[in-house]
Image (tube, rainbow, N blue to C red):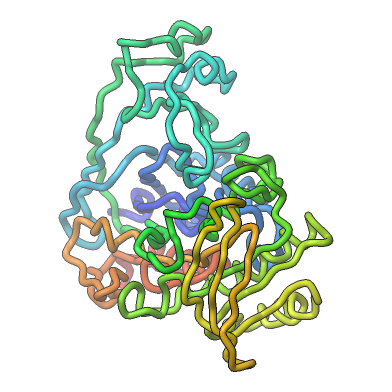
Length: 418
C-alpha cells in the first residue's frame, strides 16, 4: 500500500482502542474500528470516576468521540467481530462479521421504542443491578447515540411495538447479519478485559449473597447514570450504605483463580471508599487487604485516604462471608495480621475487588498468536504489523492503557517502513 492508501484496523473500541484510532487518523492514515458491543467506549463508560484525576470518564470519552465525528478518516463498525485474518504486514485481508442492530441511522434517540417495548432483560451495562428494555441505549452520552434492539430478547415481528411507535422509520426488523471484507496495512488489538467471575469464590459469597457486590457494580451504584442515580444503596432493600467492607484480591493472587495481581484493585477500592465517605459523612469503610499496592503517584492518594479516621485498613485475608437472613446484613470473618487476632464484623454491604481477566482468555484472536496460561497475549508472537495494547498484555490502569495506545499508533504509522 502507498502511504496515502494505508488503512489501520483497530480491534476494540474502548479507551485504548479509541486513542490508537484517533492518534493514527490525525497522522493522516485511514482507520477502521471494530467493536463487538453496540457502543464505543468500553469499560471506562461504566466507571463513575477514574484515576489519576478522579474525574468523570465521559470527559475524556467526549473528546475522543468528537475527534471521531470530525475525522473523515475514521469509520467504525459496532456489534462487529473479526472472523478471519490472512496476509502479512502492509497487506492484511480481514473478514468482519456484523450482527444486526435493527435500528438504522434515522434514529434520533427519542426513546419511543424503549417506552413501547414490553420486553425486560437484565441490564448488562449495570452488571445486572437492574433491568432494561430490549430496545435500549446504555446512557445519555452513549456513542453512537442510536438505540439498539437486543437480538437475544427482542421478539421481532411477532411483537413489533417498537416499529409502530417510531415516527422516524428508524426500526428495521428485517436487518440481517452481514460480512465486511477489508484490506489493511496493520492491526491494533485493543479488546480489553472482563471481570473475574466471583461466583467461583464460594467463601466470599460471590453471586450468592445479594449485598455482596463486585467493584464494577460499586462503580455503577455511584454513577449518576447508574441504576440508583448515583445514590449508594444496597441491592436487597435500597437501604443507604453506612458501613461497608472492601475485600481485596477477590480471585487475584490465588493459584486456584488468578495467580497474578490485577494492578487496579487496591486503587479502585480506595477510590470507592471516598465515594461512600463523600456521600454519607457519617459512614465507615473497612478495607481488608493482603498488600496495599498503589504504585507511583497513586501513593499520595493512599496516604490521603489512610488519614480518614472513618476508613480502616486491615491487613488480613477474609475467611468467610455470610448473610444475616433477618436483616440482609453481611457477616464477615477475617484475620487481622497486625493485631494477631481473628475478627467477625457485620456490614451493610461488602464489595469484592474482583480481578481483571484479558478478553483473550475467553475469545482468542483469529490469528497465529501465543498466549500465557492466563490468556494474555505474548507480544513477541505477533506478526509484523500487529500490535497488542493495554490489558491484553498485562493488567494496567486507564492512564497506562492510553500511553500504550499512543505507542501503538506510532508503530502503526511506521509499519512497513524500512
